[in-house]
Length: 111
Ligand code: FES
Image 1 (cartoon, protein in one colour):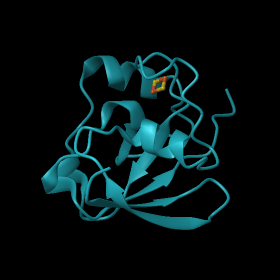
Image 2 (spheres, rainbow, N blue to C red):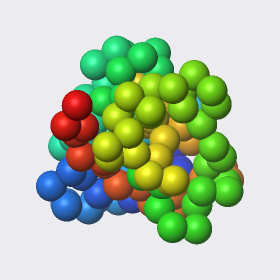
Image 3 (cartoon, protein in one colour):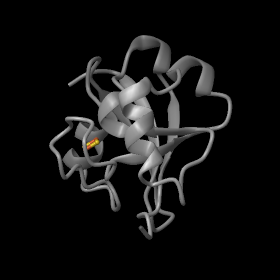
Image 4 (cartoon, rainbow, N blue to C red):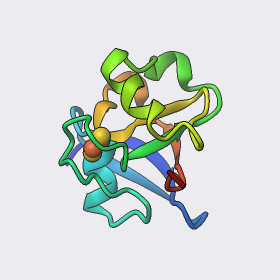
């Protein structure tokens, strides 16, 4: 148990705030732990499926950072729902500077 805060809106539009998130936890792990709708994580967090796709909340993109080339290639597979603020939840790890982060689970790709 940690003390970082994350607000997640699931794919159905339900928003929940978790305030006991441990440093080092990925957004995939957090979403799975709480059964957040739309976070699947089919590949187990290996950056190989894009079913953990989330949108980073407004104002957080600089702190969260951009996807690396491998992650970008995965996001490109779901380009129909990809946005500028897209990230893979399994590749975003909580740190003190992300305390208070807001994210929204992306809808499934139609591909
Ligand atoms: S869980 Fe598969 S890419 Fe994140």
